Length: 117
Length: 353
Image (tube, rainbow over all chains, first blue to last red; front, side, top):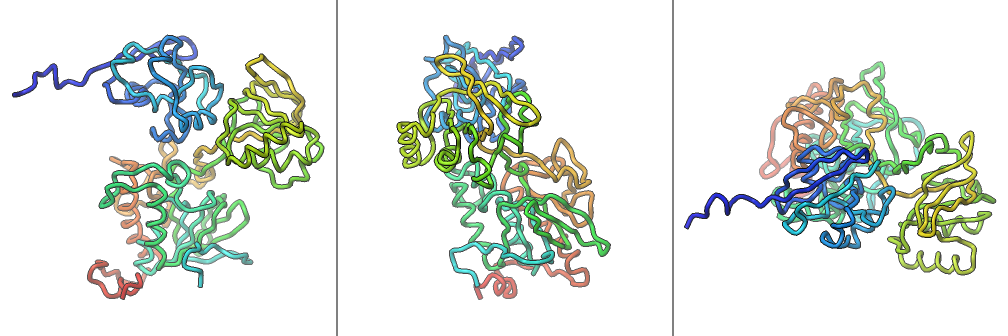
């Protein structure tokens, strides 16, 4: 049986990126992508992703909003190691290439740091 | 003759090294360029700022699987590098590691003169820039005004331990570089503070253990926190401020060594008069030659309509570049196109016949 159009369409999740100056942009991201990929697809400023999502730099650093930290889970050891290379690392710091987009994080708010380096 | 497992590197020599081709960058494309040039009897020297071959494959993702190299369903960056090194062995390339080409100019005879930051000089008929994302350089922490202290009291590497004697040293980071320098400099320092954002270290466990012992006997102070501001004048640091769980703390500091890994910068390539487009070198798609005849650019560092930054694209670019380089290196020789499967002359060069 053919699946209906609704079924074949990838589920979308809302992500809000807030810039250091307070400007916010909400984008629709396909589940299965990473938050970094969603940012790049939507030209979000301040997400550089120099290594292309290999968890090999720290230039897609974001601060996950307090309310969403439990839902996105903890960084792996490899990601923590890479976060050592980020600047002004805080409690909610994550590398956005390591956060998978799914229904569970629909509506998530992440803040872009003042600098990636 | 070099040992089978060692990589031939240049020995101390006087005067410029004359060669057919200088390849800038020992990443996958630079390595494969050795192969394609070698099949055409063109000799190459390869220069890389890293201390080993592989480029990004070695530095950024040695353990990560790559799935889009033809005929290798899965290969890690490290394995790909090793296989390329094996493949180019018959052509005896000479490697110059931990060096960066700083200047490039054209001599009166049309050959190119190149010089590295370690003052190694080359004269080559052809230059192949296979520099990927640029040269790996230490990351500069985004601390206000840090530029004016660099090389004076902020260092990304230490040449002479003695120069650190009697200083209030601050080392920032949690990897092997940070820990190794902590262990090496603590005995000569007036004070040494190691600052890391968390109480876990990526460095080798035995170094971490040694560091913890030094912290116990108070020869090293370990602070868990992050540097927020630096103070000083005329390039000389006097103090830094650190944000810790307990709040802000100011500590005396006359020398700081930040270790935040490496980033890729285009570097001196930008000053060679080549046409650039958004920090990429513009090339044609027949020869992958730049606007300067005899200088080619292959791999991630070039751009042309439809460019894809894939290893396989760089391999293709290397093959076409080699055909064009042949015309420059051997202007009077006719090039007969041959296959490695059937050409006995190619097989002889590869050492399989």
